[in-house]
Each structure stands twice: as structure tokens, then as C-alpha cells.
Amino acid sequence: MTTPPAPAPAWRGVAAETLEDARGGLAAFLRARSRRLLGSLLTPHRRTIYWLAVVVILQTVAAMVGPYLVKVGIDRGIPPLTRGGSARTLYLVVAAYLAAALAQAFLTAVFVRTAGRIGQDVLYDLRTRLFAHFQGLSLSFHERYTSGRVIARLTSDVEAIGELLDTGVNQLVTSVLTLVSTIIVMFVLDVPLALVGLGAFPLLCGLTVWFRRHSSRTYREGRAAVALVIVQFVETLGGMRAVQAFRREARNQAIFAEVNDRYARANIRSARLAAVFGPGTRLIGSVTVAVTLLVGAHRVIDGATTVGVLAALLLYLRRFFEPMQDLAQFFNTFQSAAAALEKLSGVLEEEPAVADPEPGSAASPPAGALDVRFEHVSFGYRPDRPVLAGLDLTIPAGQTVALVGETGAGKSTIARLLARFYDPTEGRVLLGDVDLRRLTDPDLRAAVVMVTQEAYLFTGSVAENIGFGRPDATRAEIEAAAGAVGAHRLFAGLPEGYDTVVGKRGGRLSSGQRQLVAFARAFLAEPQVLILDEASSSLDAPHERLVQDALRTLLAGRTAVIIAHRLSTLDIADRVLVVDGGRIVQDGAPAELRTVAGAFRSLNEEWAESLG
Image 1 (cartoon, helix red, strand yellow):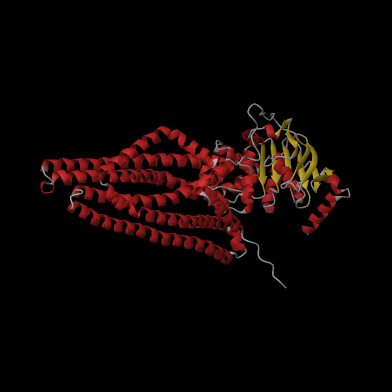
Image 2 (cartoon, helix red, strand yellow; image 1 turned 30 degrees about the vertical axis):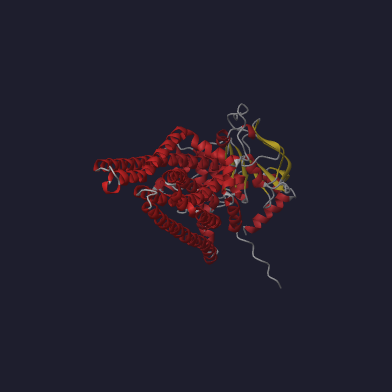
């Protein structure tokens, strides 16, 4: 019997995508959306960038004048080497050399400081945009885009762009200016010696092309590997309870060892390439200097050139090889930033599946309790698998409706459409007489609040989590909301009362306590429509009894939709809808449906049997 292959881990898909995204740094940079993003980030700093360009040019001039001053100092300031030379000339040359060195140091400091400020401003703007955009994207995006990839976008990709802004641009501009000006000055000084010195240029170019080709591939592998490391870290730590509950530690450690090994091997290959390129470049430079010195010495002896020209040309020649290494390094930095810029621009151009209304078409929900209507609503998470097909449903204002049915029947989908986490593919959902698509997000979130089975708590105190939806709420209002759900005494009795820190995701509270915090948070927000998606499933018997009476009071006069698998929760409802295959197959009061043969009575009997 053949054992079927195990499914590939999710991170392998991320690896393939990361490798694909990392290919073709130049092509990625040339894409319109990458240029648009970079342009929008740099536009506020346009004048400063022009000023920096002038600074770089002056800095290069100050650096290039040094060897020429050495030539003048030797040929005109040392009497034994030149007729008419004087110490005064030498002192002037030395003073000019020191002035050029000081100017270069000052201009370099100005560039580094100004470029650093621009770079940090750009990164600040980029991180702010990303954070705001990720929050504004629809739930469907976050369900398919892993948290590890989000963190990779906000960390390693932003850092790659930061490295380009901090050092890469300076490397490119300075290196190109240095190379061009060095070649020109060398030919001005002595054409034959310049030809000798540049004779190794083809060999140097060949080494640089080899390094660029191999290092770019190694770099892409390293970028992919570090993304996998981040994903594995985040997914494992985020699901630590499941990891430990199912004894997954060994398997996760094996997966992490694999991706970590890939990352280490990519870095080792990169180090090996650098170990060839750096020393190789220096060796070519040293051999070229030696040959140029030998040829130049003979020209000095023959009187074809001067000692000062030879000395200056050797200094220029030394400076010629350094920019080649910088350009090779810039290529990797540029490729990294271009790939990162392409991925970030793609994320920033991701449109929310649930968009705000067009300007001028927005409407506000009426005040007071609102009725809810589903008119011919069809929806599916995948086009080929509809969940709802032509659903018609009316919930009068102030009515509490319970949705029941088998798992996958469509109950949570109805709740998600009402909360507008998704939009229907056909039909419309109305709040009062207003289509949800005409409500702005703040108006919708103020009118409709959803409490889910998994009560997510943020790091902070109990009071801060209750006031999450209303940051301006007073302590008295927070405690009143807790009292409304019957939890004031419970929260006040915690070690530090309402100031008790809940820990990561509320880990210091029990599941029932977390759910009560979520209830209090929802009631403090005072929504017109309240959705409880299996929100009482985490409550134990004592906590559930606390909530039942509070729910009867707090749901009175408020439109509510409850998805429940507990018989006790159904007693709160005015009306029960039995959902099956995306259709409502039964509709009536709980007591009425219990007496009628059908799906509800069958479910009711099954629940009663499960309770013993």
C-alpha cells in the first residue's frame, strides 16, 4: 500500500511567492506602481534631494582634488625635483589639501545627516501608510494573507528600502562620479599611463558581472529564507496553545531547522562570493598599481613625465577600484529595495473588498432601533460554491432573532454580511432603509457591533479592553457596562480590579471572563444592532446565568441576531430561524417551533440529549 505524500507546509507556498517576487529587481523597479509609490514617498522632500545632489557633487570634487594637489606639491614645491620650486608653494599646496579634506568631511557629514533624516521620514510615512492600509483592508484579505507575511512587509521589506535610502543612493552617485572623473583626470595627466592603469578594467568588469550574477541569485534565496523564518516564528508563537496541546513542538522545530538552515546556507554562499570578489578586486588593483608604477618610473627616467604626475596618477588609480566594489554592493541593495518596493506597492494598491461609498452618496443610519432586511441576497466565499442564494429576510426593529442550524448552513455568513465584513454578490442588505454599502465605515461600526465566539483581548487592563470601542468612556461608564452584563463584581474582585492586565490575548483571564469582557465592550458601544456569533459558547454555567438576565434587559428595544448552539440562549430570542443550505427552512417563536415537526424540533431534541 502506497502512503500518500504529506501535504506541503503552508510556508512552502510563501517561499515560492517570495522567490517569484524577488526576481528581476530592475524590472520590478521599472513597474509603474513601484515608481508611483517611490515618487509619492520622495515628493515631499524634492527640494532637499536637489540640495543633496549638489552636496554630493561638491563632495566628489573635494575628494578628487587631493591627488592633483599632491602632483602640484611634488612638482612645484620640492626644489630638488623641479626647477623654481619653493617651500612656499609646498605650504600652500598642503594648506589647500587640508582644506579640501575638511570640505570633504564636512560635506559628507551634511549628506549623511540630511539623507538619514529623509530616509527616516520616508520610512515613517511608509510604515504609517502600511499600518493604516492593513487595518482598512477587508476581512477576506486578512483571511488569505498570513500574519507572518504582514510582519515581513512591515519589517524586512521596509528595512530593505531604508538601506537603499541610507547608503545605497550615496554609493551609486559617489561611485559613478568618482569613476567618471577619475578616468577623465587620468587621461588629462598622462594618456599612456592612463591606458596602462585602465588595462585591467575589462578584467575588473568581468569579475563584477560574475559577482553580480551569482550574488543576486544567492541574495534572492536569502530573502526567501528570511521570510520563511519570520512566517514560522509568527505562526508558531501565535498558535502556541495548539502547538503545545497537540505536542507539535518537535515537528515545528524540524520545520524551523529546515528554513533556518536554508537561511544560513544562503548567507554562507554570500560570504563565499564576497570572499572572492573583495580580495580579487584588491588583487587586480594592486597588480595594476605595480605595473603602472613600473611603466611610470621608466617614463620619469626618460623625462616623458614628472614624479608628481606619476604619484597623482597612482593615487587616482587606487581610488578607481574602490567604486567598483561599491557599485557591486549597490546592485544587491538596489535589487533588495526594488523587490521590496514592488511587494509593498502591490499591498498598498490592494483594494478593500468592502469599500466606502463614493463621495456624495454616503448616507447615515436613522436614530433608534432599526429593522434589518436581506433582499434577494446571494453570496459565496468562492464563485463556484454559493453559500446563500436569493435570501429574503426581514427582522423588525427591536426584535431578537436566533439563527440555528447545522455547521456550514450559512448562519455565520448571514451575520458577516450584516456586519459588512463582506458584500453580497447579488442583492442588498438594508439597515432601516439604507443599503449597508452607502454607510461609511465609522457609521456602520457605530450602528452594528458583533461579538464572536473567540473574544479577542488586546494587551492592557480589563478597563482598557472594555473601553476598546469607546476610548473616551469614563471609568464609571466602563463599570456600568460590566454591571449590565452581570460582571462588575467579578472584575472588581480580580487582583487589581479593573486595572488587572489581561496578558497576551487575554491569557490571564478564563475563557468565560474574556467573553464577559467582550460583552461589556459591545454594550458600552451602544449599537443599534447587536450580533452575537456563538458568543455565549465559552461561558460556564455560573457565568452564563450571570449573562442571561442581563441579555434580556439589554436586548430589549434593540435589534439583535444571535447564532447559538445552546438551548438556554434560544429562550432569549423572540424568533428562531432554522437555516439549512443557505435557506431559511423554519421561522417562528421558540416555543411554537418546539411543538411542530421539523428541523428545529430535531435539533432541539439532539441538544437536549447531549445535555443528558
